[in-house]
Length: 344
Image (cartoon, rainbow, N blue to C red; front, top):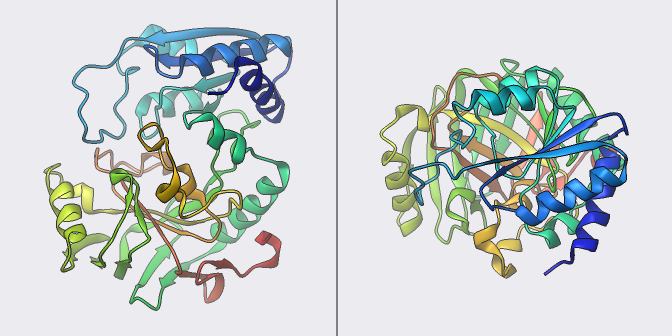
């Protein structure tokens, strides 16, 4: 258990990366007592830097279930809280608002927004730096220009994405840009193909992670993708049935739409973290999402990229030993970064 002194020290450095200034206002957004220790430490860190901090604590949202409800949060419909947040310079969100219209409205008003949720040891392990940002922004420039993205693997993955329909999203763990959201402890670059322009097969292999299940798969699963949608989920083991039945349970055809595609560049994260962690229930998979050289494949919502798909079924699936190219140039080669400017 980290001490408050340790948390304040780390969060002070985090706020410095976010270029927190003495004249600025920072709001800590909380839900009930979730991560209340982080909220208190960020308040002290902001005070120490001369900023004006305060905390907005919302009640637990109703009807919580074990099944994910991506995009739903305790802020929905709370206009006074939303209006207050829009006036902040920086928001530290220890609650979680990703994929929500509330987050989009708040960042559109110019607030910097930082999501902080992982256990403290993971935040410390994956603490961001300016070189990570440089490497991710280099990847951003490559992805912005790409017309065709392809992924493939020895296991049988071969899928083509016609790019250019959506903006590129970067995550390097801090934000000093007005209107920009980021997630502390992550490091990845991603975008989405034009709607309906993804075709091929994605083979999920043992060791790959389905983050919604907080576990690695143990048996191969083959996804057939036709015109931007998963049209078949096949495999002889439990994993194919689990993925198929889980997605079907949302009763939403938009759950099968292909969402973002990209790659991880966080060299402090590991693909095997899920196998050794002792804090799995408290985690939201930043190691799996961001580990160096993963190909991050996703289905479901795309509102964070400016799209209209707000289905609650979001499947992030980081793939190991998979290659990725942009317009024929290999970017990731079987899990290794092939471009020197992004490599470590």
